[in-house]
Image (cartoon, rainbow, N blue to C red; front, side):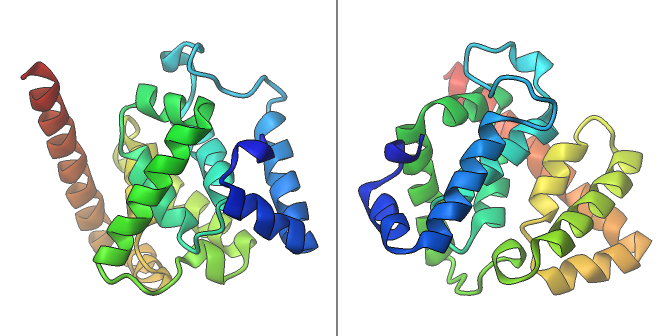
Length: 193
């Protein structure tokens, strides 16, 4: 699994034992998911795989690239259809390509700040994510994983602010839901033409 990563990432891991240990831990986490099931592959029934499980596995793989934008890139890639995300989990060269495209997009947007997951304690990030997910689930149980992923792309200050103001959160959820709906419609138009 690690040898499927780009040569530059593997070289960096060989020079930095802490990074290598982190990569090994992430790889083991992906291989032995929380329910001790087999890792997700593109042959699995897409409907049976939860969006949360996909997000966690995708996050762990993207984190191995050490981009400094793990949370944002994960959110960007989770906006795709579930089948496309399953393909990313099983095809590391495709994942690498998509990570590079997402990173380039972030750089073009002038996003120089690292995301909350890479700059602060992971426990805090997980806590914010879990809190956000539970609230978004109350507002939209059908799309809660996708919407939470989109909202987690925000900087930590904004996240904390919307978590403290229910009306701001509801507006943010509505905007994310609208963006999600429009991206699905555009995808379906593109596929049908």
